[in-house]
Length: 336
Figure 1 (cartoon, one colour):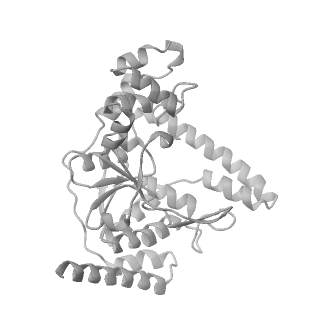
Figure 2 (figure 1 turned 90 degrees about the vertical axis):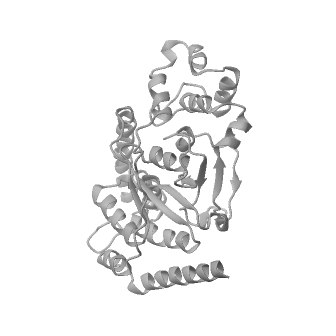
Figure 3 (figure 1 turned 30 degrees about the horizontal axis):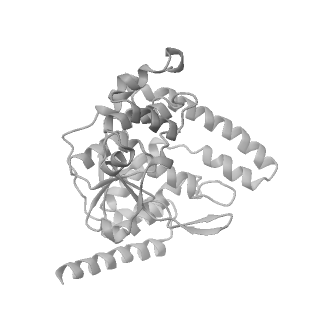
C-alpha cells in the first residue's frame, strides 16, 4: 500500500561519496519494515535468537548503518507517533492482509513449500513496541540521532529537510514528496546486492528532487498532492477507480486548482474527503521545535545489546573497527 508514482518520477543514481558529511533523515518505520521483511532465512522466517526473539531489525540497523556511517553520512532516524485518524482504515486493511498471510503460510509450511513460506512470511511482518524501543537504544549507542514525531514520521522527516536541518529524506515511499521534502533518497538502507531469478543485481541509491519532479511534470506542488490522492495514498488507499499514474498526471496538468481537479468527478466515484487528505499533506502535524542531537558512539552498549541477542562478538568488533578506521581516514583526508 501507499503512494506509487514510480513510473512518472524522474530520478538519478547517486554515488555514496556525494552524501559525505550530509545529514539524512531516515523514515524509521519504513527502514525497520525493510529489514524485517528482507533479512530472513531460506524458509522465510526472520532471524531469531535461541529464545525466539526476532533479530532481523537489529541486524539491519547495525550492519547497514555501519556502512553508511563509514561513508561519512550523518543519520537521523525519525519515528512515527500516533497515526492520524484518516490512516486507521489503511492500518486495519494491513492487519487483515497479515492475518490472511498467516493462514496461507501455515498451509505452505505443511506442504514444505519453501517459496510459498518465504512469500507469505514477508506479508506477515509486524513491528512491536519492544522492537521499536530496542531499535532506538541501538541507534543511539551507534551515535545516530533519534527524533520522535508527534504523528507521521515521513511528515516530520520531510519538515526537517524543508527547513534545512537535513539534506534529504531516506524512504522507499513517495509520500515525502507530497509532504514537501526537497529531496528523497531511495535504496539507501537496502543491501547493495540482491539475489534475483536471473542472478545477483546491484542496488544503487537514487535521488529524487522535488523541484525537478514538478518541472518535469509541469505542475505545482498542490497539483502533485492531488495527483497522489487520485492514484491513492495511505489516507485513501484505492484512489479513484480506473485512474493510474499517467492518467492522473494528464488530469492535473489540465486544471489549475485542486477544486477544479476533483469537481470533474461524480460524487459516487469519490468515497473519501479529498480536502481533508489534501490538508493532511499540506499542513501535517509536526514538531517545529525539534532539536537534532547526535549522541556519542558507545561501543560497550552496542555489544551489550547485540550480544544479549547472541550476535557474534568477533563480527561486532570487526564492524566497529571498520567504522573507526573509516572515521580515521576521513579525518586525515579532511586535515589534508
